Length: 312
Image (cartoon, rainbow, N blue to C red):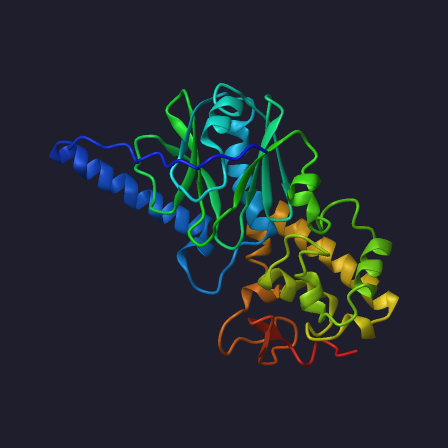
């Protein structure tokens, strides 16, 4: 991919509105902040990080509007983004978004110019629709504007080199998302493949294996805990000590948990039988009411029920 010195597009200066306009702008901005706090809780600090089902929800928020629409302007707000601004103008501006896909926590926008933007969402990235009249956040990296007055914004407060412009669909050769592990909701992650991957990482803890992006892409802290809980195994159990039958059970609940969280996120996050709704100091197991134990795995706070989750 051609590379040139990335250029920052300065934020558009706004004329001072009258008092009524100021009130309306403040009200709109406060509402937008509240809306983003609900939709993107990981972007506001704390232990919450983005996971695969959150990326699916994010895509649902803009895909219906953006797919098929032509980009009228490309604005690069972050000078550290590894994108050639001239190539971006040539291959994105005046071209329509042909399709949108996800791989793990990466989002790929395919353009009819036969180029693609690959976004690595990390732990706190977000892509969302916004009015062009609302000033961008300080963490704004890239904005794709539409003629109708809206724009698709990419913010990544804690990341660098999180977006790439690549040619064609062979993303693996260019370090794209296909170079990561298998997407856990892909049909490629069969039971046999899952067991083979586990055998190849015998020293990983069960949670560490589920969160290993070289093996499986897109599973984070909370859903790794949920999969372990629903399957009935301790997250610190070494996968090298697990039988094929036990691994098959983990694979079954991996698919169940992520499919439900993706298709029915609100129902899953209101289910009293899910561990994800009982995370907190002094919380008890949703099955047996035993107080949950917390341990540290991969540097992350991990919730375990010592009664319901077996060590072998």
